[in-house]
Image (tube, rainbow, N blue to C red):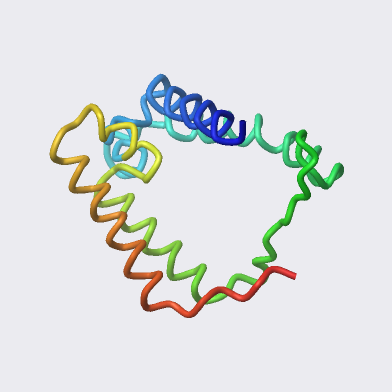
Amino acid sequence: MHLLIAGLCGLLFGSGLWISGMADPANVLGFLDVTGQWNPILAGVMGGAVAITLPGFWVLRRKGHTLAGQALHWPRRWPPDGRLLIGSILFGVGWGLSGVCPGPALVLLGLDGLKSVVLVGCIALGWLAVRRISPPAPPAP
């Protein structure tokens, strides 16, 4: 049942990316082009996502468990550590250079041919490299 729910959530997420235009790198790069032809569509999509998600997080934090009754374990990442900061910088640089973050990259995998295969392959290689060279993260309290 968990796999089915995860698959449906992934399908919903991918559909939202496609419908909103966020699977199109031109929209993302247009948002990042603040000195030229700035395209505010990404701000609207992100604002809508935050407006929908925040109440859900508020409810989950108050309840302390999922609808299925599983306990929730919230990460403690304050203050941010070096690993989080370096990862955030690398993520932002990769997103800015390619115009695609990992979610839309997976959507494009079935639509954009070799370019997306290379992008997803590079994401996977980066993930494997970090797993190999990084010490394990400390357990959440």
